[in-house]
Length: 600
Image (cartoon, rainbow, N blue to C red; front, side, top):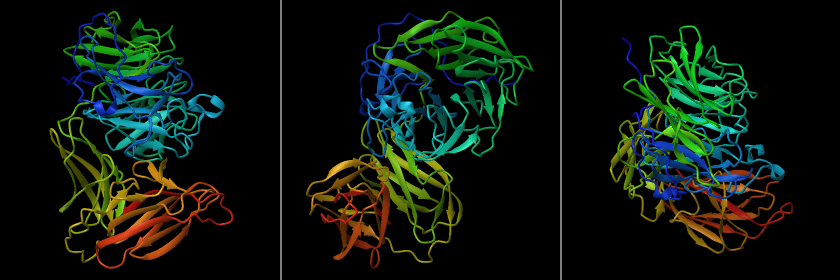
């Protein structure tokens, strides 16, 4: 007998009438750990009338048993700690379809790096903006309710309308209004196409029974994407046979309930949110060995998001409409016409709309740790320096007390920079070329959380390495820092500006002659990244008394990295960055914009 799969986790619930639901407004800083088997709903808006403009996004947690509100997590509406904003187009109801990772540890959510109220060109929908202007964002959410939105896609090929994503914590798959099924890594700004073309139009990605699935608009209504979780180009689709050619499917869930199995899986039962039938229906399909046939349908007007869980032969289905979270119980799901009557669990407050729904992520106690660099699968050269690592580590119940970075026998304690970003460079000692596993351990309230990432080391480490030394408390150790770091002394007039080259997405800019940034750095190399523009002037960089003048003018905005070799063995070096108030004849200003300082 085949083992039946509890595909999405969860327990059977008793349906009750919905109570009035207050407008929850707790902030991201107030996030608490999710409760296992609770429901998480993607909500757009905070009470004002929704329009084409960017609206705030919230994740609302509800109990399955009665739809009681538990907490609300507000997604960022501006840059912070390397996280981008994640907002949604107020009237684009096909967006916001959330999914849970195959191991149950993460939710993947999508949106736009735009401030609340932003629109597309000439006041059009936010979706009309180019990704190079308004990044398409994928957010990851773990069991602590901590959100990482550092994955902001700006390169060509990013979805025009981003609707859905899936993650394993490192690797990310995303899709939407164009570009097919894309893949990228946490913190990246670019992606590559796994399957489909620029003309493809998909809605929801899910991980079920160890397999990536997608639902499509106009084609590939419900489809299996390659085998497992593919990352290579040219992956093919296997469409579910027998589904209507007019089907418009959003959320869906597969189960193994009979002896049949489709396309090399054990899956034989399909629940899907059908937006093309009547005003919307919840459909149940069965696979008979050759095709999928409709077993039963229930009217659910406006249905879009869907999640389901199996317990003792019954399937509990939760679905969203713009105004409601509804529940349907399929008693004796191995039968055919066994769907119960849809019942409302919760209602969206006025001026807001529900989009997708998923089961809450699960995980062991301990801080959240998102490894931002190096990317999974990345090749790192170790012939001259160690392996630089950046981690976003945070806890909902207190401070993270330490982060360690390990490859093989080489371990280093990371240094906390601005906000909750930790960084450090794993020394070459003990490293060898080839496949390697990076282990990051974050310690704080609840214990220690360890995450791993596979990378490749290239080159031969130097035969000798500097002896162990102690970094002075007032110096910047190896790592990448924003100029707003507490160890950087600011004099004169400086203000923050948005920069994709900064580890916190914010740099410092000034046009005031004599304004300075001063820091002590401990390393053998310093890289300063400036943002050039047509209004940029000249800046002086003085290291241990040696002055270098740099012209930052460029006709178009451009990031510019200037490398400085620090003299002698590992030691402290004093760096002074000064606004000169001068410019070349082509520039229209004297602005100096510093995005980051990287010590190696």
